[in-house]
Each structure stands twice: as structure tokens, then as C-alpha cells.
Image (tube, rainbow, N blue to C red; front, side, top):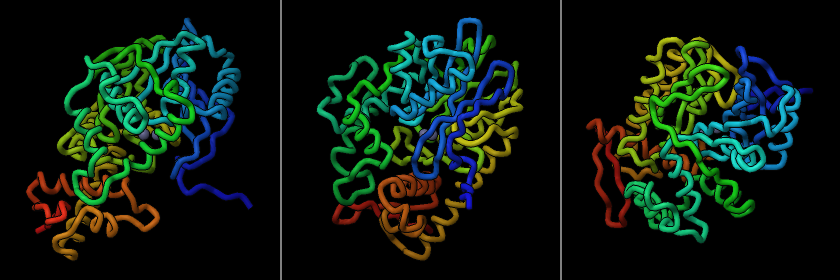
Length: 355
Ligand SMILES: [Zn+2]
Ligand SMILES: [Zn+2]
């Protein structure tokens, strides 16, 4: 009996590669993370070789899959001249440094990618001050410092979200060499020449601060990273630089939904799909529904902590820092909208009350 995954994002990586559009190949790389069975690495071919987008985890298994997939496409590692990383999660940047080392590849990410590096340095012996001062801003420092003390919503000494801890474990295992050195830092509106045509950078904070998508109006393609996925919604962290990370995410969804000239969306997990605007709207609706649920929980609980809310909002298997962080993002959104009040109790916990 074969076990069929519940969602396409959970499907195991297949060895076969597929041509999504002229000079654009989809290659599935193996990952095993909650709710995810593969990550898509896209290869954009041109006369110089190829650019790859999101080269998987920093593991040997992933690298072997990369080599095998490239071989199928008639490419060698040294043909890869550019690596684009959509955001600072390890299932997206894993192979970047190795391409830089073995192929001299340019590594491209958003200017704020540093944020991810800062987070990763937090638990190691490297202090924030050891990192390049020029690109540090106070906001980054505040986030790192916050994690050294307590969550903004109070309570016991916090442990960073699961993804962060997992990344640090990897960092310790593999050394800091896994964290990509960004050679080309981009911002919204920048243009990259890949697959023989122009791709526009869209900055889409929400899932992470540094998330970017790439738009090819000529080929009518949109590389969406984790910002817009076919059937699941990305984690939204309350521990972000933005005052209202959920609102930032909504804005980023509106931004991409309004783009003309998109016919095919190439997500980082799951299959390509074609209606970007309606998928972006559905993801917004999911969060509106969650906000309604939070308000309902608030009426039932009365004044309550973020943890109390999160334990009503999430199933027990999801309880923990990630659930609390996402709950915090929703509660803060309600507070900023005027739909919730807060105060701190004597123990320093942030208490929310929804009308
Ligand atoms: Zn991600
Ligand atoms: Zn991802």
C-alpha cells in the first residue's frame, strides 16, 4: 500500500527534472521538515551555463541530488555562475557556499539577508559585534538581544523558534561555512539577467524580513519562494523587525497579486500553479479567519497570555515557540487595529484582551 502525502508540498523529492518554461528547469531536492518533503531548485539556463534558485539544505544528501539533477540537464557544478537565495532559511540557501567555492558562483540575496546571519550567530561564540558593522542596524541588534532575555510577550527565558534552533544545530555541525556569503545584495526593483531575459526583484517581507521573489514579465513567470505556496501558508513570526509583521505580509501579498504579466508561479515547495492573485487572496483570507478565531478565543478566555491564546489556536502537537510567535503576530495585528488591549501583569507577561 502506498502512502499518499496529504499535500503536494509534502511529496518526496523526485529525481526527474521538468522544463517549466523555455530555459527554466524544476529540480526537486530532498528535505525532511515538518510539512515539507522537498524543496524546488530552479535552474535558469543561458549561454554562460546556469543560475540556480534556492539550492536546498546544507547536507551531503542534498548536494548529491544537486549533482545528479544538474547532470541530467547536461550541466556540471562549475557551469553554475549564479545562485539566487530567496530568503534566509537553510532549506533554501544550503548549497550556496559550495557553488561559490567550487564554481566561483555569484550569490544573490536581499540586502537584509544579514538578519539571518545575525540570528545564526546568536547562539555561537560569535558576538554581534564581530559581524560587519556597516550593515548592522539597531533593529537587528534589538532582535538578537531580545532573544537573549525574554520574549516580548513575557514568560520564561525563551528559546528561539524551532527553525532558528535547527539552523544553529546545523551551524555547529557544519561550522559557519554553511551560512552563505552574499556577493550581490539586491533590493526591490533591481533587475537580474537570467535565462537570457530580465527578472525583477520584488521584496516581500512577511515569512522572513529578507524574502524576495523574482518576476519575469517577458516569460510571464513568477518565482515565489515561500511567500506564496500552492496549498500551505508560510509561518509568520512575531519576532520580526516590522512592528506589525502580519500587516507586512498582507502588503507583500497585495503587492504580488497586483503584478501584471504573471501566468505561471514557480513556488519553492509544491507544483507550479497559475493564479497568483487568487492564491495570494486565499492566504490573506486564511489569516483573516485566524484573526476572527483569535478574537473568539479572547472573548472566551478574557484577559490571557500569548501562550494561553496559542494553546487554543494550535493543536497540542504544534505548541511551542513557533506557535506562540505566530499567535503574537496575530494579537499584535489586532492591537494595532484597535481590536485588542494589552497590559503587563506583575510577572511581566503581556496580557491581551479582545473586546
Ligand atoms: Zn522559509
Ligand atoms: Zn521553504
